[in-house]
Image (cartoon, rainbow, N blue to C red):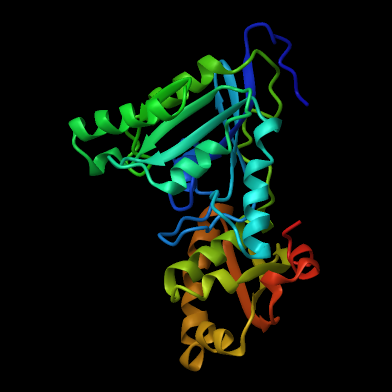
Length: 302
């Protein structure tokens, strides 16, 4: 831990970003950091692990946890995802609840709020996607959520367009406790490049395949080496699926789908790493992995 030696003036702390599925948590974290480190998709339940992003200001360090969407889980994988989200409640200094700007409050939002009843840290409510509503509707939404829970602050934002995000960060910094700088100032995440690359590959699968395919996919980075003689990073990854039919869809006719997944992923990985990348993808069938506890652990879902 790096202490700047001025803990009576400097603020720092851990903030868990929570909310129902597909509400924009990953988009918000990427917006805050100014760089994409989390998977973004229009499909729900895309984030499977807590992802830590670090925002540094002259007077504070905010460490964000992007959690899986909270929902009533049935499968082993989904129960794992919800457990990952809710177990941060008592390990953080603040909770940022993200909801959508809608004039009606659904059961999913009410379920998330119910999980907060025993929490003893400040909770900020950020109402996302305000660009989809007029000002009057936004005020109605704020009032309805205010009646449900005594939030420390309610702030309307658009994570996609950036409006309201700066005032949100100001409020978070105000509520943080005084403390040390936990991570070096230039650091924006503590997750490995291998993990981010796996998430980028999984994101492209979400974008390019039908609804049921992405939820049966796990990506494992098998090899990650720098070839200095050709100034290239060589990455080999295996995409695990549950059914032979899914393997066929991912590979596509004459390998066309797998090539497109690789092409799109390689572009993002090269932007991330700032160098040329050779990306080699393979698809492997592992029947029922998302329902098998030992397979989940082996594929990184502990």
